[in-house]
Every structure is written in structure tokens, then in C-alpha cells.
Image (tube, rainbow, N blue to C red; front, side, top):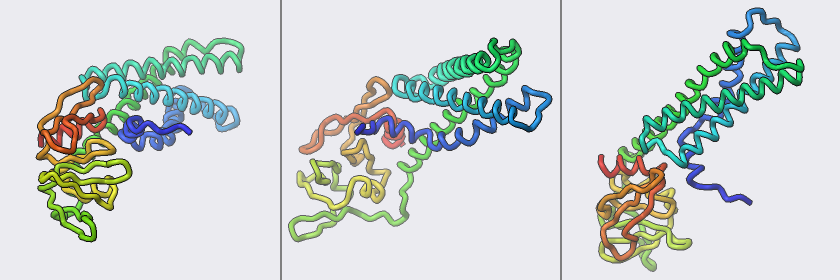
Length: 276
């Protein structure tokens, strides 16, 4: 069984809901292209066949473009020279998409007619189709920055108006309320969730990091990765790494490491949180 890559999964979340958008939009794009290309359109089996082929070509071209964008996210994130990345992405996706459309059109033409596609396909049809790849890029770029904006909003504003003053922790038979100001960080230690305090004590918590993250004041706490939430008071700064990642530098303490790596997906949100 293949284990999902959490970085890739997070990358795909930055474009949500792109799959639903394009599954719905591509048939409409095919219909518009069909209307712009042919002047005498007759309802019938031939129309259904050609429209289905055009739509299938659109889906294939979109899938190839989508994979190229995900590849760029791994090698050249938007946070690194964003304008150049966007320009390269537009040129690259257009080249890939038009190549896929041209090759599949030639293949269909040879199978159906035994000859290459008409010259008008390259002078008119590909020009019209090329315009749509600007739209596709606009949707992907817009979704990325919209979802990034949503992440930064969630780190600035508490989700609840009445945020509790601390966490409940067990100490033997006792249940203690730990003040947020006393917490350095919360981390997963094997199967346990542990709160580490300034007074060098640690307490085991009953809740998961996912649930804790939703209840803790986001202006004071940030979840660096799947294992660690830290308090602002323990953060000294950060240093940039390759591929858009950053290393968060923590003040010396008895529990947490001095540096914790943050993925390229979370890095922009951390910078906003660290420098409000």
C-alpha cells in the first residue's frame, strides 16, 4: 500500500477545488471552441463524436499541465522569485498543452481520414485553444494565493470568540489548568501528546494536535509540522533553506530542538505569523 506524501497532499490542498472546476469547465470550453471554429453546426451523431473527442483531448491536456504545475511546486515554489515562476509556468503549460492537443489531433485525423490535420487547425484552432491556457493558469494561480490568504487569516484571527486561558492536563489523579503563557510547545512523543513548560515540567494531554490547534490562540501558537506546535515566546527567528523551506530557530530549552524544519507550503504562513 502506497503511503501518501504529506507535502504533496498539502500542495494539492493549495489548489482546492481545482479538480471539480476543470471537470465541469472543460466540456464548456470545448463547446465554446466548437462554436468559434465551425460556422455550420448540425445536431447529430457526428457532433456528439467530435465534441466527445475534443473534450477528451481537453482533459488529457489539462492533466499534463496539472502535473507540470505540481512538478514546479516541488522544484520552484511561488515564494521563490514568484514573478519568474509564474512566467515560466505560463510558457511551459502552454507549450505542453498545445503539444498534447496537436499530437492527439494529428492522431485522430490519421485514424479517421488517413491524412494530417488541416492547416487551419494550426492557424486558427490552436490560437483559440492557446488563449484558454492563460485562463487555466489564472485559475491555478488564483486558487493558490486565495488558499494561502485563507491560511494567513486563520493564523491572525481566533476561530472562537471565547478562547480558553489554558489547557487541561493530567498529573496523576489531578487535572490542572496550564496557562498558555507557561507553555513552550506541544509535541508528539511516540503515541503521546506532551506539553512542555517553562518551569522544565511536562504534562501529558488527552487531545490530539489537530484538536489542540483549533482551540489554542493562533496569534500565540503556530503548528510547524505534524508533530510540533510552538509558542511565539520560544521562537528566535528562522533561516531560509532550498526549495522554499525554512528552518525555525528556537531559544535554548530542555525539551524542543534548536531548529525545526518547516515545509515550503507552511513557510509563507509562518512568516506572516512571525512578522505580523
